[in-house]
Length: 480
Image 1 (cartoon, rainbow, N blue to C red):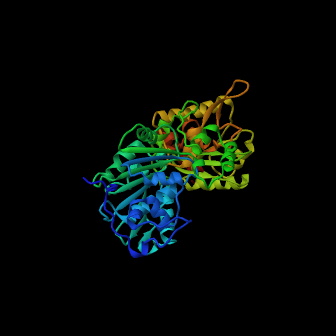
Image 2 (cartoon, rainbow, N blue to C red; image 1 turned 135 degrees about the horizontal axis):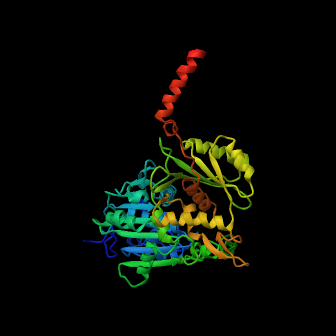
Image 3 (cartoon, rainbow, N blue to C red; image 1 turned 135 degrees about the vertical axis):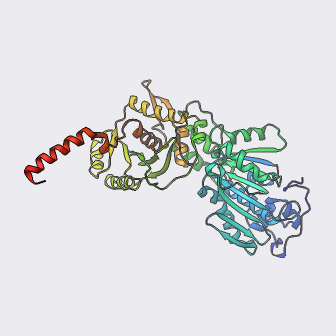
């Protein structure tokens, strides 16, 4: 079977509209066959974008599997969009139209590369090739060449990917896509075309993405991998990158800006547990479902975080997340009361440490709520309960990046007095409010769920007979 991206393929002439007309940035022109063969030259002469050195290195690799571990702002979305455009315009090894799929953990993330593709198409010489661009229900670009570019979410174990084929699949934020989704939903897309798998992501633990990365470093002729720290983008100053160090933990900086893979030694939640629990999507309230809300009110440097948990059946499911930034307590209380009402009169568990008045104000709205007071001991119990729920597969949550990031970097630290502290270090710009809200929401069914009492629970047949005798007796005297 021929490979869709065979480097020795003949290249058909470019259409007159896409012939290079001169030099850009002082460089000379290139022949059409060179532009067809080279994504970098195509980007420069046709799309009008000059990739930087390491982007060009990534673009020119035609391995069946290529992996890029990228730091923030390296330019992975632009590089991927240029790669996708090149194959869509020039076609496969024989110049035939191609189908490509952009995949990411959520629909919003999948459209990031799609939006860049659309921008390059609409704002440059490639615009005559656009047949249609649709955004709903799914992002899709159709070119007059017959090529199609689609973007889909990997949610629900790749349910929106199944049943299609592709000459290339680009998985953005691949570190957040499960092994099962890659094996059972993504790889089958390439089976009929012998197409290319592209995995790009910021590193996030030693997971399936890391395994592919190591495979590409180990001499596998079918797989090549690259590590692109942020400073390899010449358009970002080193001073800017260094300024980010003080806004996050050392582990975060190494992963997100230096593109390093880190182990789980100091973390509370093992990556394998996070990955296993990441499934499903956010959901609107369902009739007769029972919901619990965890609320970590904003104070000091933290943001207010809210988690809604569906406790109707196991595993418990996170169905909504909220951040209430820049709001005073009165506004937050109103928002929580409204959210509880929306989710079938949900019970609320909130952090009331040093702020019992806030709990009473929420109760005054008619919402059933209870407060959790944090000490070193109670926080350990709360977080242990969350860890055990993950270990026992009793909890799932959608691929909400803020929540997953906080879980990944939630850690044990040792204070000067020797006490163990849980959470994001005080000296960093990291947050742990979403983790706290999740743990609080889980504590509602565990410790503080009000029991619904029905008339049958307290009214026996004997009591009913006794009441009937009294009613007749009293009624005879009082005219009941």
